[in-house]
Image 1 (cartoon, helix red, strand yellow):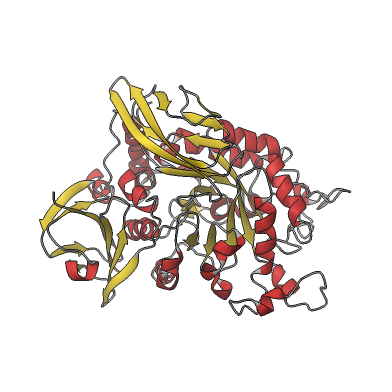
Image 2 (tube, rainbow, N blue to C red; image 1 turned 180 degrees about the horizontal axis):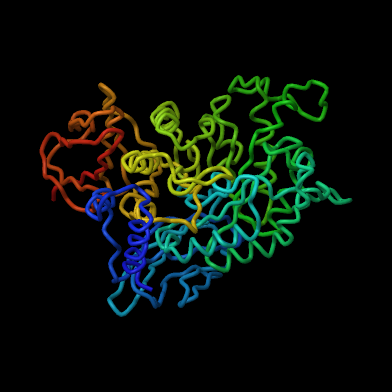
Length: 521
């Protein structure tokens, strides 16, 4: 089915259901900014991919355009195979090195070509993870069936053709003895050998991971370094290596490791099995924040499978300063986000302290995305206005943050689908330099952020945190550039100015103008 046709159908759905209380199709068009993808093939997503020697390799070539599409690749490293019908590359590479593969996608409308750099070494997740997490919509009600349906929706909506690739199960795949009124959670935490046991909703974890992989997507999981997770399910305390092996054997590719009950362990001097080396660490950490993550980080690296390691401990002990040293790929820098402007702005506009610690394979994580149908078990349309949602996606992309959707993928309206399928915006987040944007100007709640890009150009965000329309100026002196620049509006995907010394734009309340500035040749 043509993506433009899908978009049109979803637009009609939004209008008929009055999702945004718009009075006419004209007012809907005012907030839907991204042009529909062309029918001619276009290869999107990450331009670089990291894998460890001998680890299973899985990469889907994200491609928009009319189906069917036939894929091909030249200079594919030994050990890898491409399915020319699905665009899924699998296998493994034994030799370290950098391999530049030429990808090609062809349909009846034309041909697209693009290089993919495959780096075989010790660093994975060379661009920020993009995908979906179950918590912000299903919370404690998650199940294997809902995860499979989310997987299918990621495929059927076309989101995977824009680089969205992870399907992550959050808390409540394990058993939970506190919820005695729920029979699906009442099994043993572990078997006689100490292996963690999934609850009755998740009877076949390997089968579930295999199902996700069969679609060209990757599978994620959740645990805690403490005895219990935040939801009081089974944690990994004293079973770290065993659990890491279990996750690898099941075929999972991502672990979110949530602090939760470990706080009691760290503060309990009677726990002789907890080395308190962190009290002598160079970071001066006296909270016990480092040790459990180092322990699991080593356990994950020891597996014969690449597992992205997401540290979830809310920014304690300046985690951005040491997260990479414990094999972390991303680390939460804040508390939990909710779908309000206050939460979004307090979190998003306070990332300056850690921006310089972002690098390929290592990312500051200001928490999951709060667009679409969210609600933590009681779903509702996000309370953010359309302008606030554009600010959300723009800012997270400038920060090189992981982009994890928290919405119901089966209830994507036209606006949300448009919002999260703009390839020029997503390219800012997926830029191989992985540099976090820095604020270079701030006055009267008007901010300018700048981010260097691999191609030598810059991405610039003009943000209006005030409640009134405002004109924001980005001066070349503040941006650290000189000379004539072409200014391209990334949301509208069109060039809007050619300037020598500054760029000005009117910005809506709580809104953004996101541009790319390129040197005039």
